[in-house]
Length: 376
Image (cartoon, rainbow, N blue to C red):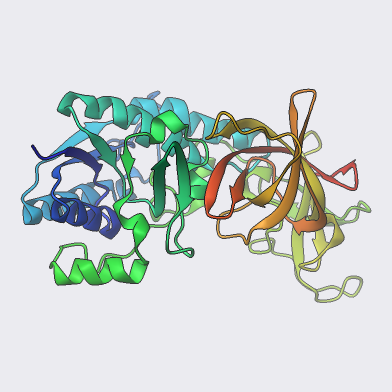
C-alpha cells in the first residue's frame, strides 16, 4: 500500500511543488490548508475591533491551494487554528513588543501550530508522515538530524530551531533537497497554477498592510524622546515597539551643524524612561556585543551538552554563521563571540549549527559587551 502523507498547503509555490514531488515519489498525498487568522470579520478573537483585516491574503491563498490540489487530483481539507494561533503565537508576539523586544513569531508558529496543532489534526487521516514546504532536510541515521536546505540562500532551519526530535520524527521536507530555481522550473513544467506566484514575505496575519499601523491597533503607541547616549535630544520616536536594534529606516533625523550628515541608527532602548537611543554610523560601537544569554533553549539532540560547546550560530535569519562558544552557568546558557557581532537583539533567536546540522537554539535575553550589559 502507498504510504500516506498529510501536506501543509499554503497556496505558495513551495508547498505546491512539495505536493507534486510527493505524488511523483509514490505517496498518497492529502492537502491540509491552515487558517490561522480571521480575515472575514472586523473583530479579533477577544471581540476587539480591528483595522483592515480584509487586506489579509489568506482567502486568495486558500483558492490557490485549492486550484493546485485540483490540478494534481489530490484532496484538500481546511482547518481553523485561529484560537491556537492567538493563544500561542500572537499573544507571545504582543507580549514581546510590550517588553521592548523584537520577537520572531514565525518560530513560534512552527513550534505550536505547524508541527503541533497541525500534526495532531492530521492524525485523523492516519498518515505515515506529515510534510511541509520548508527548505530544510531531516536525516535519520541512528539519530535524527535537522539539516540545512540544499539552497543555502533559502534555508529555513533558523525558523525550525524550536522543534523537538519527536516533532520532526515523521516529517518530510520535499523541497529541501532542491534549489529554489529548480522548484520554479518544476512548477512551470507541471503547469501548476502557482508557478509564477511571488513568495510571501512578512507575517501571515499582517499581509501587505503597513506594520506600524497594524501594531498600533493592538498596542497603543507611546511617543517619547529620541536621544544620544550623552542625553542630547535628537527628535521624537513614535513608540519603542516600532524600532529594532540596528535600524536606520524611519528615524526621520536630518543633518545638523553639530552632528553633520552621517546616518543615524537605533543603538538602544530604555523601557522605563520610554527613550530611544540613537547613534551615527552603521558600525557604531554600541551596536557590537561579545556575548549574550538565552532563555527558552531547545536542543534537538537531547544527549547533546551545551556546556563548553564550540559551534557556529546565527543571531538573525540570513546572517552569516558566527563562531561561538557556549557554556552553562547556574542553569543559564551563555553564548560568547569575542570577535564582536553587530545588532544582536533581545527577543530574536540564536540558533546553533555544526556544519549543516541545526542543533537547536534559544531566545536572546540579554546582550553584553566585554561583560557590560548593552542598553537593549
